[in-house]
Length: 508
Image 1 (cartoon, rainbow, N blue to C red):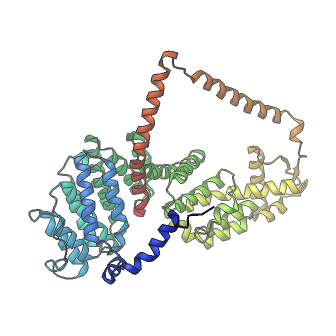
Image 2: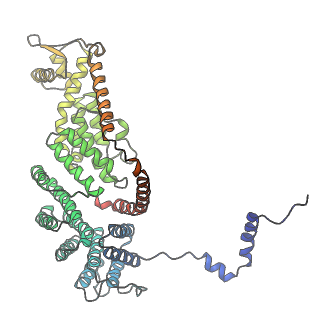
Image 3: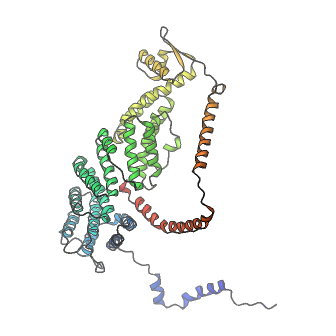
C-alpha cells in the first residue's frame, strides 16, 4: 500500500523550526537575541504606588497593599540614595511638604547636596505623581528602610518621628496597613539607634488612638511592640498587666499572632507556668513562616529550656539541624548535662556560654535547671544502687556537703521523684524495690480513660450532625457549588497576602 511521505504535524513543526532562523534577516536575529532590560528601582516603586492607589480605590483592599510591600521587600537590597531620591521626586507632587524633607534625608546618607541627589536620574517622565496621603506615607516608609539599612541612626530617628507625626493627621482605614508598618520601624529604629524607653510613651498614645479609631491591624501591631518594649527591660509584671487589659481584635494576621504567642510564652515561662508557656511557644513555632529563620531560632531556644524545666528532654535531631547547629551548640551542651544528671557539666556549660545565655535573656531560666539536673542524677543513683551512703551521693552529684545531699534526697522523696528511705543515724539511702507496673491497675485505668475520651468524642460528633430536608437537597447542592466557586476565586488573594507577610524578614 502506498504510504504518504509528507511530514506529520510534529515533523512539519520541526522543519519549520530548523528552516525559519536561516530565512530570518540578520537584524531580526539581533533584535530577538537581545534580552529585555530589567526594570529599574524607581519604576518598581512607582508601580507599588499604583497598587496602593488601587487599594484606596477598592476601599482598603488589603491584597493590593500587601503586593506593594512584597515588591518593595524584593528590591530593598538595591536601594541607593540616588534611586530612592529619584523615586521621591518623581512620585511626590511638588506642592507636598514631605518631598524636600525626604530628599534631604537621602542626601544625609550620600553626603551630597539635596539638590544634587537623585537629580541626574533619567527616564522617569512616565511616572505620574500621586497626591494621596497613602502614597506619601509609603514614600516615608521607603526612605526609612533605606536609612535603617545605611545605619544612618540620627536621620532614621528623625524620619521615623516625622512619619508618625504625619500619620496622626489622618484617620483613613486605607492607611492602616502602611501606618502599622511605619510603627514597627519606628520601634525598630529606637531599638537599634536609640532607646526603646523613649518610644514607649509614643507607642502607648498611638495604641489609644488606634483603639478609638477601630484600627485593628494598628492595635495588634502596637500591642506586640509594647510587649517587646517591656520585655526588653525585663518588666514582666507591666507586660502582663498590659496584656490582660487590652482587647485583641478578632481578625488577626499570622505575623502578629506569632509575635504575640512568643511574648506570651516568655511571660508565662518567667511566671513558672511552664505548661502554658510551652503551648504558646510551640504554636508560634508551628505558625511562623519558614523564611523567618531568626525568629524560629529564638523560639527553639525558649522551647528547649521550657521543656527541660517541665522534665522533658529534647531530641538530638531538634538541636542539630544544619542551619541552626552552630547557634544551638550551647543549648545542646545543656541538654546533654541535664540528660545525664551531671551537675559539673551543667555548671561548666553555664559558665562557658554565660554571655550567650545573657544575650538571649535565658540565664534566669537556666539557673532554675539546676534542681532538674540534681533530680535526674538522683533518679539514676536510686535506680543503680539499692543502698548508698549520703557522702557518696554528695560526691556523685557534686554537692558541697553531706547535709546538702540529705536535704536534696529528703525533698525528692517527699515530692515522689525517688522511691527510697533515709537512715539518718547511719547517713544511708535505701532504695525500695521497683514494682512491676503491669501487675497493678494502672494500665487498665489509663486504657479506660482513652476509650472514654474516644467514645465521648464520637457521641459529640453524632449529636452535632445535621441533615437538610429532602426538598432542600437541590438548593444545598447549588449553594455548595456557588460557595466552591467563591472559594476558588479567593485563593489568589489569600496567597498574595501570605506571600506578602513572609517576604519581610525585619517584621520578625
